[in-house]
Length: 132
Image (cartoon, rainbow, N blue to C red; front, side, top):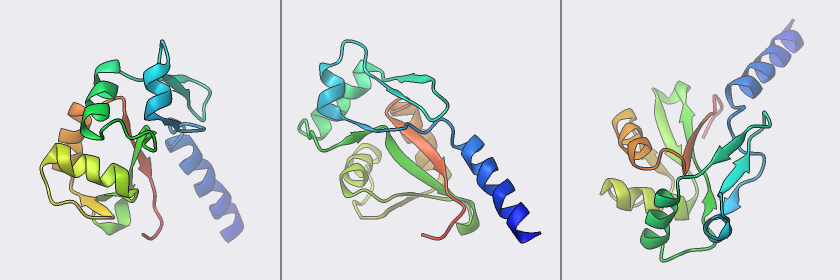
């Protein structure tokens, strides 16, 4: 029975996270593209807002190691906490939200709502039911 449940839960996570890109792309590559995009796990195209890319280029001093979209992990078992594990992404998000920079960067729902208002196309939320 446990195997069936594991298969079911894995499939549900795959469906919930189908919007995650197959491969993330660097900020510099996206800035060079006429229409900046990535392909998601379900095969759809996710197009980036060039204004957001320019904002990130300004904040990061055009850091070509910044991979997009930035991943915000939602961890439901940790009382609805969100986390950004990548140090570059954490620094940029902390700068945008005007909060203390730390890695990993833990965020509450209000932080994520504000961040997604500003960076709607260059950030994405990943459901991660596992441990940190």
